[in-house]
Length: 422
Ligand code: 3BY
Ligand code: FES
Ligand code: FE
Image (cartoon, rainbow, N blue to C red):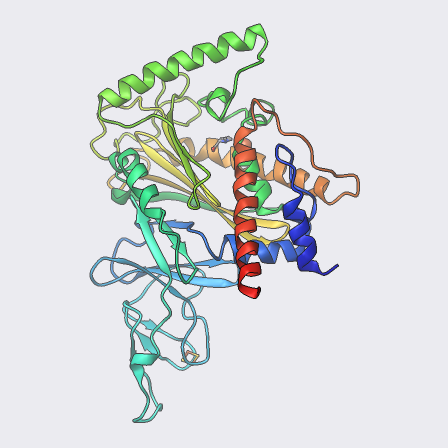
């Protein structure tokens, strides 16, 4: 049986309601397929506009084997290009942030404008046509300041529907007028899907996140309360009432808050504004705002947290004082980069308006706890004793939705291949 037939067989026999079979987490050939079929064909969240505020600001991000330059051009538009010189292919910019006038290849100094056009070369002769050697563009889309790229030749068009639905929720937080207060790159020792599955449930929260469970209600994350015992039912019912009252209050202020679940779309996503415990203000240890400068023109501090989750690789929490945003990028079958950014109002001054420790401590601790959980899940998936286990119908419904989306997208990709080769 060839490798590709066995991947197809794994896709075909995936049992809904159960975790995936081990090769989905461990095999190099599934990983290669993930890079091609998932990360090569869908909208991938990679950066925020405040990373590139001025013309010539660039940020370079690796998506699998593709390095992508995201930059702001002279007309203040966000653009993206493959980080591959059209001469002999050298990388133009190193990973991370930089600021340039033009993009000059370090190898033989071919020089590109911020629009990707090849402007200047030496020693290429009079016949050489510069216009045929511009940088290869990558689809790029900023949704309220969140930058998504798509490596496919033709990008999924339902990003328009996502933007239309989500922008009314996130624009009031005015991400574009924020600055990065802190940023971390954490390498988790697990497959990227274990990172995503872990994000889609709060079953593990009470047992593992002492900091996060101060501001967050575990019932806020896809909890289906059917068979709760009496004690938990009371809590869940109280939470539902708080949710309904909070939504009514926030929506009366002009802040859309109700759940949208479009997780089955090609560019799948879900959003909901969630109450915060205690003072109700922010995802901090004391539940109060960490930054005194309120974002945008928000009318109140107690706005809970607007959460936005996207398939396949991101989640975001927008509060009245700060935004936390997470991008998940696969490195190898068993290593995954989680890039976290904390944003505050661009005029907020550290030590005056906000304290970095108070701003970052909840998610710094939570990220490390989640990384440890992903590592033990990966270790288990590599054991000969591992077999897919059942998801809780009450707390892991969104994990199932992630896996169902993933399997569906792989099937569509493989189906397309079969059609093409038929
Ligand atoms: O970040 C989230 O989306 C939350 C926090 C903990 C688990 N997850 C559902
Ligand atoms: Fe870029 Fe030669 S490879 S100038
Ligand atoms: Fe967690």
